[in-house]
Amino acid sequence: MNQFPWLVAVTSGGLCTGSVLDEEWIITAKHCVNVGNTVWIKAGVHNRDHNLDNEPNMQIRESKEIYVSDKGDFALIKLPEPLELN
Image (tube, rainbow, N blue to C red):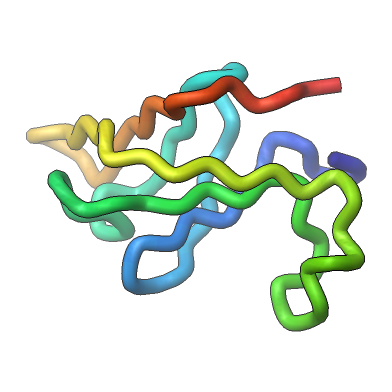
Protein backbone atom coordinates (compact mmCIF):
# COMPACT_ATOMS: atom_id res chain seq x y z
CA MET A 1 0.00 0.00 0.00
CA ASN A 2 3.13 2.10 -0.48
CA GLN A 3 4.02 5.56 0.83
CA PHE A 4 1.01 6.24 3.09
CA PRO A 5 -0.35 2.77 3.88
CA TRP A 6 -2.52 4.01 6.75
CA LEU A 7 -4.64 6.28 4.50
CA VAL A 8 -7.83 5.09 2.82
CA ALA A 9 -10.53 6.70 0.70
CA VAL A 10 -13.92 6.85 2.47
CA THR A 11 -16.92 7.24 0.17
CA SER A 12 -20.48 7.74 1.36
CA GLY A 13 -22.06 10.30 -0.92
CA GLY A 14 -18.88 12.39 -0.90
CA LEU A 15 -15.19 11.62 -0.73
CA CYS A 16 -13.12 11.79 2.45
CA THR A 17 -10.04 10.13 3.82
CA GLY A 18 -9.66 7.86 6.78
CA SER A 19 -6.86 6.25 8.75
CA VAL A 20 -6.36 2.54 9.30
CA LEU A 21 -6.33 1.76 13.02
CA ASP A 22 -5.89 -1.96 12.40
CA GLU A 23 -7.06 -4.58 9.91
CA GLU A 24 -10.74 -4.14 10.85
CA TRP A 25 -11.14 -0.51 11.97
CA ILE A 26 -11.01 2.84 10.16
CA ILE A 27 -11.28 6.29 11.76
CA THR A 28 -12.65 9.22 9.76
CA ALA A 29 -14.53 12.47 10.27
CA LYS A 30 -18.12 12.14 11.48
CA HIS A 31 -19.34 14.59 8.83
CA CYS A 32 -18.12 12.14 6.16
CA VAL A 33 -20.55 9.33 7.07
CA ASN A 34 -24.20 8.77 7.87
CA VAL A 35 -25.16 6.08 10.36
CA GLY A 36 -27.35 3.51 8.62
CA ASN A 37 -25.93 4.24 5.17
CA THR A 38 -23.31 2.21 3.37
CA VAL A 39 -19.74 3.47 3.33
CA TRP A 40 -17.08 2.22 0.93
CA ILE A 41 -13.43 1.99 1.92
CA LYS A 42 -10.70 1.88 -0.73
CA ALA A 43 -7.20 1.06 0.47
CA GLY A 44 -4.10 1.03 -1.72
CA VAL A 45 -5.39 3.66 -4.16
CA HIS A 46 -2.75 6.15 -5.27
CA ASN A 47 -4.66 8.34 -7.70
CA ARG A 48 -8.45 8.34 -7.60
CA ASP A 49 -8.59 10.21 -10.92
CA HIS A 50 -7.22 7.44 -13.13
CA ASN A 51 -8.18 3.88 -14.08
CA LEU A 52 -8.50 1.78 -10.91
CA ASP A 53 -7.64 -1.35 -12.91
CA ASN A 54 -4.02 -0.19 -12.62
CA GLU A 55 -4.11 -0.39 -8.81
CA PRO A 56 -2.81 -3.91 -8.05
CA ASN A 57 -2.83 -3.36 -4.27
CA MET A 58 -6.32 -1.85 -4.07
CA GLN A 59 -8.70 -3.39 -1.55
CA ILE A 60 -12.37 -2.40 -1.35
CA ARG A 61 -14.62 -2.95 1.64
CA GLU A 62 -18.27 -2.02 2.13
CA SER A 63 -19.66 -1.43 5.61
CA LYS A 64 -22.76 -0.18 7.42
CA GLU A 65 -21.23 -0.66 10.87
CA ILE A 66 -20.48 2.96 11.77
CA TYR A 67 -20.03 4.40 15.25
CA VAL A 68 -20.04 8.20 15.66
CA SER A 69 -18.85 10.37 18.53
CA ASP A 70 -21.30 12.46 20.52
CA LYS A 71 -18.60 14.98 21.45
CA GLY A 72 -16.27 15.27 18.47
CA ASP A 73 -16.14 15.08 14.70
CA PHE A 74 -14.94 11.51 14.36
CA ALA A 75 -16.41 8.16 13.44
CA LEU A 76 -15.22 4.57 13.61
CA ILE A 77 -15.98 2.14 10.79
CA LYS A 78 -15.84 -1.61 11.43
CA LEU A 79 -14.93 -3.54 8.31
CA PRO A 80 -16.77 -6.80 7.60
CA GLU A 81 -13.57 -8.35 6.24
CA PRO A 82 -10.08 -7.42 7.46
CA LEU A 83 -7.69 -5.51 5.24
CA GLU A 84 -4.53 -7.32 4.23
CA LEU A 85 -1.76 -5.20 5.72
CA ASN A 86 1.92 -5.64 4.86
